[in-house]
Image (tube, rainbow, N blue to C red; front, side, top):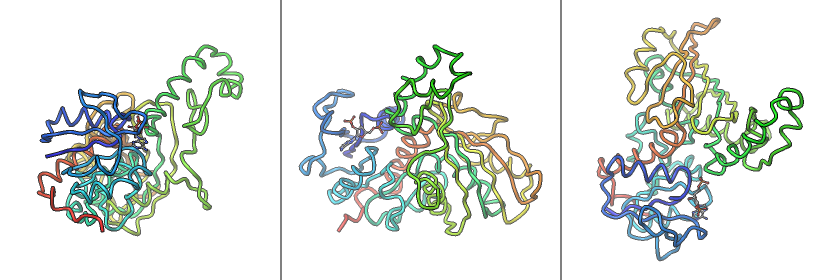
Length: 344
Ligand code: A2P
């Protein structure tokens, strides 16, 4: 089994490499790829390769986390060379010939990888999908109002670095933070996040469309519909960046076809694989954890068909690298390696 890791030097790629080791992924050979900037450097005792037509053939599985444009340009070439590609970018997620899979939610969709490509959902969508599926199976989900609190690490290593660099300069002058926040915000650089993120909350994550929603918010709606197999699911998303390094949280107001009983809802959540229930989970305390955790589960004050809850997951682990590796494991277990239909 030859395995490629594309984007091996990035925030998600680094966690992928750790997980492959930790979970003893059955690869005989691992080849790491990154940009031309990193080619030739040594990581885990392996020399990083550049993406070139003569380096991408002959793999069984390729894990991609190198951004959408790299996936668009190279995933089909790996697939044509015989690999099943598990792609963490947004490039292929809505392609009807590419399954979009959360390992605990819709693993059977893996059999529909007609291009030899499988897509990993957006890190925020991923975290919501576990409780949404658990509750949908009991009560029939019809609508979600989802407001995210997304960590800096959702923007990759550069997102983490930008937040880290802002904290100390702003913390030096607490008086300014309290009395002249605008001046404090201007004291540091930002280019990854839409505003200074340290000591702040930034309600703009991605590019706005004509209707006033960001691409990140549209991913939450469109990907939820595809994963849950509910094309008409009503979703109202608001995506917000918060000064957390790693760990996305989402407050969800979920409406169901049947009145949800709270005890039955908690039972469904507790029984769902890799999902835990706690009273009030926080992202800081959840960084580094494989499981997703849901808390503040309560009936709506006004509408008997509604449950409100708060869900937290490590965006680099379950939100990205862990699900990618889980999908690769499922691809192996289901005998899909070598069976991918190469791209035309
Ligand atoms: P590099 O470190 O050489 O730039 P992150 O999501 O943390 O920003 O990481 C992005 C990953 O994708 C890194 O491993 C980065 O490699 C890789 N990458 C970025 N652009 C390209 C490209 N054009 N070709 C291959 N890999 C790329």
